[in-house]
Every structure is written in structure tokens, then in C-alpha cells.
Amino acid sequence: MEQKSNISRYLSVLAIILLTALVFGMAGGQANRNQGSVPDSLTGVSEEKEDPAAGSALETWEQEYHNSPAAAVEEETETCWEEASNVCQTDYTKITYSDGFYYYQSAADRYYLYRSDESGESRKCLAKQVPQEIYVMGDWVYFTNLSQGSQLFKIRTDGSGMELVCGERIKRFLPMAGKFYCLAETEDGGRIFSCTQEGETKNLFEGKCSWLCTDGELLYFETDNPEWADSVDLAENAQEEAESQTVAMDGEGKIKEKYKTVLEGLLPTEKYLYYRKTRKSGDKYVKEILRLDRQTGSLKRYRLPDISTVWWEDVSYAVCRGEIYIFMYDHYVPAYHIFQYREETEGFEEICPQGEFEGRKTFYSKAEGIHLVNGKIFYKSWEGEGFGQLWHVLDISGGEGALFEGMEEPVAVTTMGDKWWGERFREGYVEQDIEYSGEKEDGQGFIMATDLTLPRIGGEVPAADVINGKIRRDAEQFYEEQLAFHETEEVREAIINAGGDTSGGSLYCCLAYADERYVSIVYRRELYAYSGIRCREYVTKLYSSETGEELQPRDLFEADWEEASLRLSYLIRRTETGIEYCDGDLFSLDAKVDKVFYCLTENGLEVFWNETLVNYAELHFIIPYEELEDIWAH
Image 1 (cartoon, rainbow, N blue to C red):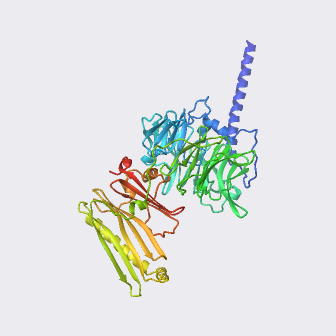
Image 2 (image 1 turned 45 degrees about the horizontal axis):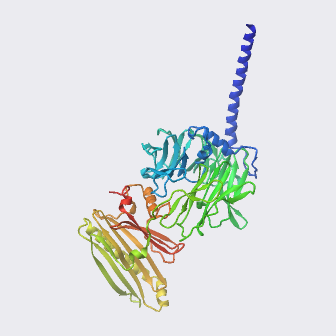
Image 3 (image 1 turned 135 degrees about the vertical axis):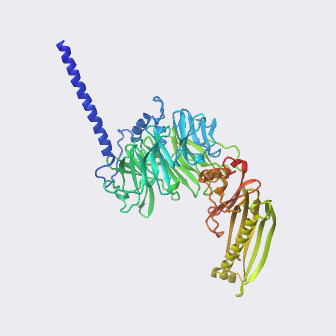
């Protein structure tokens, strides 16, 4: 009995010792994690070589992410690092992977939310909504919905049961520890807040903030409220009067790390911070990705391939399993390049040999983005006129890229000249034109010639008198501009040098369309003085038939302009960033500019693109009204 009692006491003491050691060990480890994140003295940088025996920092982070509820992946699968890499890239997460399916923003069908099998052949539209960013948790797909004011929605992976999760306008969101962390930007600042899968929110930070990324434990963002006392000084990156800085906070809103500058293009992992920088080397500037060791403060530089015509906005990069992948787009060839950093050669190696586009080469025949998902690299590449950018896929080890999501029929494209030259278009409630042609002597031996062709809106339009009055005022304003043009020194010199005596101006109505709801007019305005000076522009006017109020193109849509622009850009196959309305300024035919405008006709919304930056082109697209029915303002 006494022996058993002694054994029991011994075991009790041993248990207490082990428990005490465990508790203090965990506390010490957490202290080291918090202290190590911001070195006490980090005033310089040094070249650092990674220990090949040590595990990748990202691999460690991926394991932690894999074990968290956010990953929602079975233990025996090998997809934890792909799941983690979704938030370790410099682009919005527009494609993700879960349980044998990809979920993505379609480039072939109006940017709707789609699901596809791994081959890309079996595709299903989950919702006729435009997602900005997409993540999967369990049986739900979560996405910021551009079709609904960038609010956070969820829908089941089979496309059923779409629900609103959070009603705020969200710029970016990402998963961490079973929750979502959201960035909401406003005109006077913004805020960062957490959101559960059920939609319960908690405010974490208020003030100026932009972009949001995570290492799986901390949230990193840019703010304009520097606090210098305990910020990390990155030596060459520090700025004495910097207006913004990068900070990191935990999931409860406590600031953990502060840097005395902005770490642009930041990708954080548990051990390293990757960010981009341009520095001067000799007589030229070089682009680099820098890797900062958060424990030691050592810095390693990765110099990007020397493609001088590539700008930072055309560079995307991602980090996965400690490897760096870079996507670069060269406007002037045009061509795209995908590189992987090779430790053995200490340089970037191109892993996708294709990339140069055939056919018409413009700024809008482009490729963009890089997403590392399920052991694959996804990116958008120009597939040809009428098709625009479509999803392509490349094995992460390199090789030939392939089309992932095809498009059966291209969008028909004609030219602006096919539409306008030699013919007047008058449709709907439009009566006979008002025409004027005359000359005026200015008393100094010069003549100003004016030609006007103006539409006249019929009485079937309720606000016809108001709109016709505005048309007359447009003509009067043009005449005043022509008079000022005629009296300039440059125009007089051009007339004299040409041996003539006349300058001219023309306001010509190419198209006038009127129905019960809208009146749409397109003018071609020209000012000229022989061959010396010649200016031309197209100007569109859009009016409400009911009130005569002048409208803007965005007034045609009940959807947010951000979504409408995406939809229009899809249909005209230009770029993903959408199109902009012509600002109405006169410009020279020799100017390096492009203009986009659109008008209403019986056929639909017609888009005209006048591009002179790379090669002179005037393109014309027709978007049928039925294609816009779900976002049109009825």
C-alpha cells in the first residue's frame, strides 16, 4: 500500500512539472513570435542566404492554414498549399479550387460566377452575378458581388441558395482562422472589419487604408497615420516625411508591426515579407522583388528580368512553397512572360515560351494576372479580335500554356468609317435636319467658313422643345469656339503659309435617334486651316425624352457603374477594366490618345473606339439591348 502511495505521489509531481514546462514553453514561444516580428534594431539590411535544411516559411504557414477552419480541406489531400496561395498573390482572387472544381469569374460569359471541373470542359454558371473576389468554405462559395454594390454574398457550390452575408461595400476580403476580414474604402477613409460566415461583423480599424493581405495570422494594410517611435526602419526604404506606411494587426485589431514606409505589392508569409521596389543602378532603373526576413532583418534581392517596356502595373507575382512566380506583360511587342526564380542559377527563368500575340497589336490586346491554384498557373490572355481576354492555364512546372475557358462565337467588329462616312442615320422620332452653310469676312482679309447639320427632334418626344433648344445652344457654342480658333496666331500663320485666306469649321450630326425614353445624338466636330492645323472629335449627347435633361451613359443602367463597365468591356472585348466616356475635348488627329463613346440606336447600344496610340484604328461594336436586359434601367 505504501509503495503504491509513493508511486502515485511521484506521478503527480511529474505531471505537475510537465504541465508547468508546457505552459511556460508555449508562453515563451508566443513571446518570441511577437518580439521576433519586429526586430529591436533593424537599421540596415544585409544579403541573406536561405538555409536549405530549414523548411520553407510558406510551407509552415500553409500547414497552419491547412489545419485552420478556413482551409476546409481533408487532411489526406495535398491541396493545403494551393489553398493558402490564394491569398499570397498580388491580384484579386478571381479563381479558386475546392474538391475537384474551380470557381471563377468567367471571361467567356459576361464575367458571371462559374464552376468548372479540372479539365475546363464541364462548366456551369452558378449565378448571373459578377464576382470581384472568390473563396470557398465548406459547401459555400463566398464572393464580393459587383452586381450588388460589391457586397459580400454566398452561394452553395451547386449554385443554389444565394444569400447576402454583409451589406457593406467591400473593396477586398480574405479568409483567416475561420472568418473573413474585409476592407471597406470610402471617400473620407475606410475601415477593416471581421465577418463570420453568418455575417456577424466586428470593427477592427478605422481611417485611411488600402489593399489587404495576410500571412495567415496577421493582416497587413497601408495607412496614412504613421507612428514613428516603434516603426521598423528599412534603411534605404525609409522616408523622412513619408505620408503613408504599412502596418500589421492581429485578428482582434491590435497593431503588431509598423514599417516606416509603404511596402508596395506586399506578400507576407510567416517568416518573410516579399515586396517590390524600383532602384537606380548606374544610369538606369531596375525593378526588384525584395524578401525581408522578419526574424533577422536580412534582405534578399530578386532582380526582375530586364524588359524595359514593362511597367509595375503590368507585373503580377505570387509566392508558393517558397518559390516566386512572375507574370510580366510587354505593351510594345505585345507579349507576356511567365518566370520562376531558380535558386541554382540565382535568376529568373522563363517557364512559358509562348506569349507573343498575332494579328492587330494594340494596348488592348493584352494579358494579365497570375493565380497559383491546384498546382496550376492561371492567367488571362488575349485570344484574338472579337474574343478578348480568356482564361489560360499552365502547369506550375512550366511548358505550353493552354486555353482553359473557350468562347464559341466572337463579337462582331466593324469600323467607325463603315458606320459614319457618306450616310446620315436618323431613327425614331427625328424630323428633317436644319442645315446652314456660310462664310464671314473678319475685316482683316481672312474668311471663316461654317457648315452646320443639326437634327430636329419630333413632337412625339415630350421634351422635344427643350432638347431642340439645347441643340441650338450647342451650335452657338461651336460657332463661338470656331471664332476663337480662327483668330489665333497659329491659325493665321497656317492660312498665310498655305497661300489661302480661309479657315473652316463643321458641326455635322452623324446620328440622331429618339424614342419614348431617350434621345441620342452623335456629332462630328471639325476645325481646320488647310493642312497646317486640323482638329476633329466625336461628341455624344444623351437626353431624357421625358424631361430633356442631359444624361451620362451610367444613367442607362440600374447596376453599379463598376459592373456596367465590366459588362460593356466584355461585350466590346477590349479590356477587363472597362471603357470610359469621351470627355469632349478637342484633340488633334496626330495626338497619341484614344477616345471611346457610345450612342443608342434601333439595334442597341453602339460603341465606337477611336485609337491612335499604337496604330490608328476606328472600331465599332453593337451591343443588342437584350444582352443588357438584366442591368438596363427600365
